Image (cartoon, rainbow, N blue to C red; front, side, top):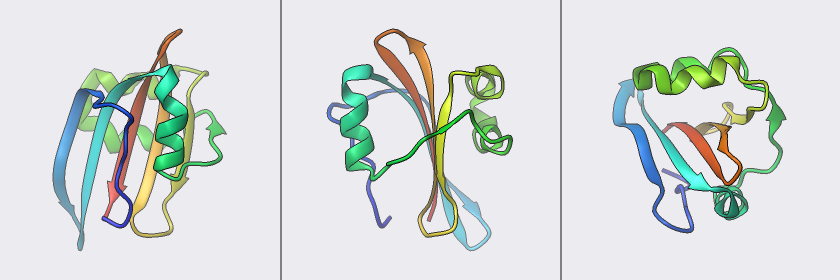
Length: 111
């Protein structure tokens, strides 16, 4: 993968799919919880700059195997997301506020 995913400390993994074939590539996804204080470090290390308010309708589909964990992406107005779907690796990241000091991070990568 051209750009690795970096966290300041190991995150709490809520759900993941280590690799599924998708056409000629491989899709990897994970849902992790991180403390709010580590969010900026994650964004900088992973090269995420501008998040958009809300989550596009197609993003929850990338996490359908996570079941009810991904349902918050469909309904919460406080979610934000960023997509870089036109380059490889194609990346989609969404953030959900799980509490005042924690964020749930949804990461989907197509390599």
